[in-house]
Length: 275
Image 1: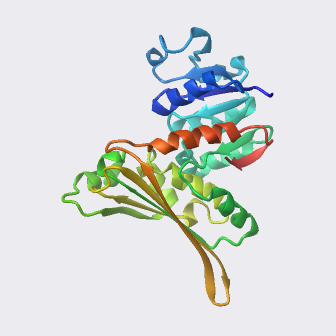
Image 2: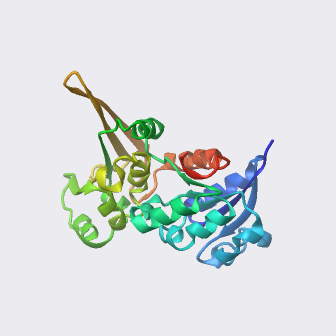
Image 3: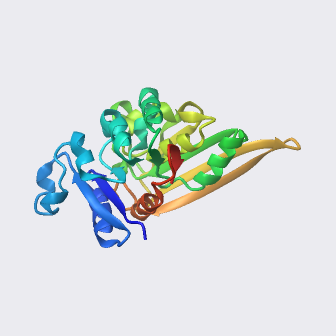
């Protein structure tokens, strides 16, 4: 059995979940854990696993580095990570910046850049369509309770002003413009834009809906349009209900999904991979 050494960047709810999973699984070894606040690690993580400076990750000899902290990590450290190991981007909204996407693609020459599918159902099939050039349109709609959004700028004010129980469309348009306004909420859309590479962040449509009635679920709809046959377009639409309490940015099923992505990540060589 091949044992994969995992480095975790970020020790919030998801980072802690993944760290515990690594420590429990016989096919993983924990290489390191980094967190912006070191005090969150002390007393919870053995000192030998604590990384204090991300520039020093090479000293821990990881096979796979997993970011679950903040999109800015990929911008600042992504190319460095890829010099050391395979890199799983847990905040793919960072890639909405063309400069960041370009820098990571250029750096993924010896190790692989991995994009977790997360709540993006059917990603492998959509990737195949993009590879063949048969993917004509893709729309991802996310519906959540207002308290489940962590938004910036005009979207934050719009969400906070919602009254009553009717759903409100906060945004509908290119995923590229949405990612900076909702960096913690639309990683699924960013993964979709990477899988649908023939459309990209400008061609994939994102729709964000704030619904006060959604007290138990996060809902993700993926609407795929393919080639025209006999005057009609191929179409697939999926609807995913992810259990989530009010205030939860991440639905409960996403934790297990991300762990599955981490298990699948690594070892595929250079380039960009969906997992």
